[in-house]
Length: 416
Figure 1: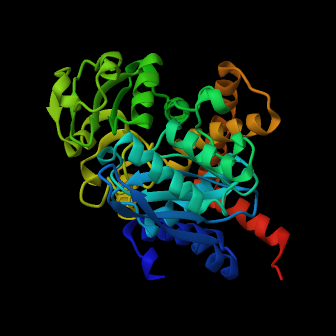
Figure 2: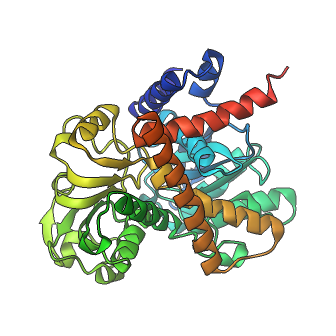
């Protein structure tokens, strides 16, 4: 399919092919798992504030549902396309399986710059999108969540639109909602907290002290900001963070609390809390832990050799290309792959879904404890697989996740 032929989708398929070859995966299964189970492309006419109608393009892709409902975020970004969404859905499938969650992978998005819209335009766009994907979603079919450019308010509009269609409140149709309509404690910080938990495990494995660890974080959105805050609370020194405009650096450690108090629309370098650096300069800083928490394919064959971190903890999806992986392996960088490192979000989304279905809600302490148990167990299983099979952490994570999906397909059989 020509529409899928994008760099991000090619990266996801190349990773899958490499893992499938190492596993000796059945050829028939390989062909099935390379492509989504179902893809929907929708036109979204929206009346703008000035009265004219603008048509946006939206997507919802379900990669696999062999283990249960599909699960995945909705992304609002100018670069959203079918290939990117399909790649993210594939990675979600492996991520859910690796964590042991009863989900398949899905993803959605709209090609739009959300900050260019008024609140009213954003709501009308979201509700039209929810109405168009209505046949595909549901608590037992496909459960969306926030991603880049979306938040709890957007999830609330989707939940309300779906509920209006069926005639009663269905909190479990989305996760990442406000608490007042069935959201879960700990959901907003979940991905960042998960990044911290697996990074702490990696530091212990490498016999490195958290108190002497320095951390650089590319991306200071939801994932990066919570990672920075919690890493600092754990005793690490966060020396650099960045956003789309660039970053700031302070060898003695940044004041993360003050950075979090700023207006989010204000560029980081305007805070004057550190020396101004570019995103590329951040990636090459001498640090213990580097967390790419922005967009895909930030670490490539062109810049991988300049990285000077000991641990690469992938907060973003697909931040490292295959060529960069080979270079980092030669340099001895310990990579915690995206489908493991950033799985905290979907793990706590799973908790929210369970709570909605049971109409019984847990404490923040319970949620943090359960998240730590699941994600650190997944880390230890992946590390053991990597050591026993003499493969990278990324290949270990992919092979483990893919094997779970393959077993589900083989046991369910082929219909008809």
